[in-house]
Each structure stands twice: as structure tokens, then as C-alpha cells.
Image (cartoon, rainbow, N blue to C red):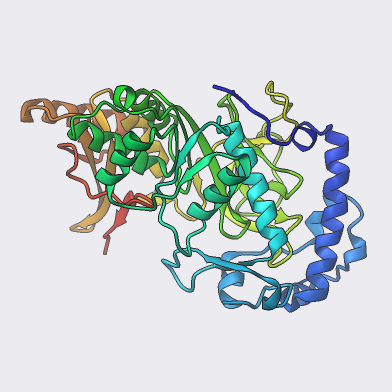
Length: 432
């Protein structure tokens, strides 16, 4: 626990000054996009809005939303606001549906990304004395590079171990005395499980005591299990390729909401159905506007991530707003027999069970004319079949109490569910 502040002047800036800075930058980015991105010029003209109409922060509601299809329709470089010659790096999303979201960075954009990541990592305890291991695949995916740049800016020793090769990752941690790791929570959980299978106790045989994880939602229960397995302080980071990659927000040592860097991102929360703003601490869809991005600025991007913004200021001293950890996605909601269900609800139930491990899988399928749900979950350690059956019934009852539907539950041995090193695929929809 450290709660270090990387940039005290900005991170503790009085709220009125922060709002003034946001307005100045909002005016500039609207002008920049209007003059240099034909998509935004057409969208603003269609709403009869000119850059000079932005006089207050509330005027952001005059601007059009940007949605993921806008980025795909303009693939690869149609939303660029500068010449490609001005950019020095390109990253893209995984592109699992349609064209990948492609983003180019100017030197200034990379500097901003490094800065916000340095703030996130410092908030999570990273210092110049740390050995920082980065077990994320290096490539088009933004994750590895964001953590790498931020850790270097802090001044930590970076071990760019990349993705996969789990046994080697653990050996490097032991050999180099790794003290801080990054990545996705599900892979950190898998590393702990693998270490145990190799005869190691992560808490005793390794020196990892801090971790910052993102790229997927993870519940407070999984966070707690990671903390217990590794005896580490676990922090949550939020970001998306469209903004910069990881680095939009992170939780401080209060572990009660994530601080979002308001000098670089302007946040709104809207009703996902109407597009209208919701009230204070009322849940809705997070909408983000880049305030300092040169290469590919984005106005009012609908993230589809569900959260709410906290009222009041954090005890850690930072003045930047806090939002609730992402609950789910408005477009990832599962509808089963007319009931709305989020995978995070099921994970929350599973992580409350001491015998349950950290890996699980949800499969939706059709039996006859009825939709069914199968929840498969690994135990923390191998147990007799009779105990598995009892645990399965216990889990089934607990899930039903939360979602009102009765799922089928299968309890498996540790390692039975295949694990991805980037993002764990939790839901498989095989319905006809």
C-alpha cells in the first residue's frame, strides 16, 4: 500500500482549475476535429453546431456521439486529424467482429499515454526500485506497450517477458526477483494456479507484491482471491484502444472507485437507451472525449461500459473524478428466457466460494426450444467427486438467487478450462 502520486500538480489540481483546463482543451479539440476530420465536420454541420458554439463544458451535449461503427466505417485512417507522416506508432484492437479499431499516435500522443500510465502505475505502488514484469503479448494490442512506456517513465526496471510460456514467466519472476506484475486478472490467477502446480507458493517463493490488471472486467471477489494467493496489493486499470489504450483510470489505495484523468479525458454517463445524461451516482453508459489527442481525437465516444461517477472527493487527495469499476457492457448483456443477465453477476457468486478457483466458463445453448445456461468452474485444488457434486448444487442455488434462473453447474479440476493469456473468454453463446 503506497498511494504514490506521480504528478502532484495535476493529480491534486483544485476542481475549478481542472474544469477550466478541460474547457480550454475541449474547445481546442472540437476545432481540431472540425477542421481536419471530414467525418466530424459533416456530423457537426448536420447538427448545425460550430466549434465556437462550445462555450461551457455542458455544451458537449451539442456534439454528436461517436460509436464503434464510425471507426470501422472509416477504417483504417479516415478519422485521422494529422498526416500519417506525423505519426510514429500504430495500434489496433483484436478485431474479433469486423475491421479492427486502428489508432495512430504522434510523439505527443505517446508522451500523454506514457504520462497517464505512469500515474496509474505509481498509484498502484510502482517505484524506481521495482522490478516490473510485463507478461502481456507485444504487438498491435495496446496493452503491453502502455504498461511498458508508463513503467519506464516512472523509472522502474522493465522485464518485457511478453505473453505465454507460463512456466518461463514464473521462472523469470523467481530469477529476477520481480516485485510488480501487470496484465489481465484472469492470467494473473492462472499464473498463481500454475505456480502452485509447480510446487511454488506465490506468496512465499516469489517477491511479487503489487499488480495492476485490466483489459477485462473482474469482480471484487477475484481481486480478493488474487490478493490472497500472491499476498499482493491488487489494482484495477481501465482503458480502451479508442482513447489511448490502458491508462484512462485506476483505483487508488482506497480501492473504492477508479480515478479518471480529467485533464486528458472528459467523461459523461448517459442512459444507454435515450442518450440523455443520468443523475449523480446513477448508473449508465460511460461516454469519453479525448481532450489532448492529436493523431486521432474522438468526440463523445460511446464505450458501452456501464458505471457511475462518484459524488464528492477522494480521501487520497486526488481531485480527479472516480467512477465505479465497470459492471458490464450495455451490448454484452445476456438475455436468457427474457431475463437480463451480466456475466459479472455470476462471477461475483463464484468468487464468494472458498473452494472455487479463479477460472470459469459460461455456455449458452438450446435444448429443444428452451435456452439453457451451463456454468463450468474449476476448484482451487482437486477434491473428491462427491464434494464436487455438493459444491455444484451450492453454486446453482446461489446463482439462482441472484439471476432468478436455474443454471446447470459443473465443477472441474484445476486446469481443466483452457486459459487465454490476453483476455479470458468467459461466455460462449451456442444457441440456435
